[in-house]
Length: 157
View 1: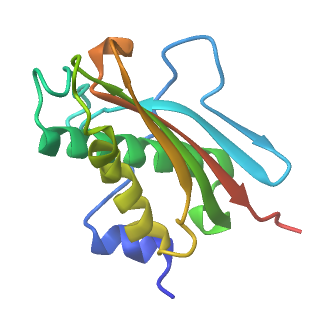
View 2: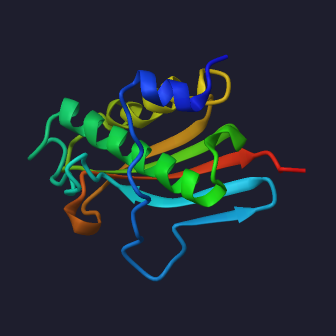
């Protein structure tokens, strides 16, 4: 089994510094064997928010990329929380909100951008997760996508 660090390297990904929350809440919380990551909006590699409504301003491929950026932010927050992504035993859940125009119905396709990256990073077994993908009339900073995550982590003991 490849290490998570090696998988990130193979994907050409370097995790950014964990983003600060946009409000009065914790960016992550460790509770026993669970790591909860607060909603991560779509922040591109250039540090700018990928913004707009799917089905109006953005197409499916742009939405998939935005969801992938959310997953990268989630991984950065997870690393900030626990120090080493190898401590993650399993991705339990992704919860996704897609900034969508009325009538847009391809939310699951968009959120596959995050799910697919998690599988590439952790492997199919560790990243086999449940999720929701729903449309929203708006998101913070007009972000295209926002995703939260729950992981199970191993203790150091």
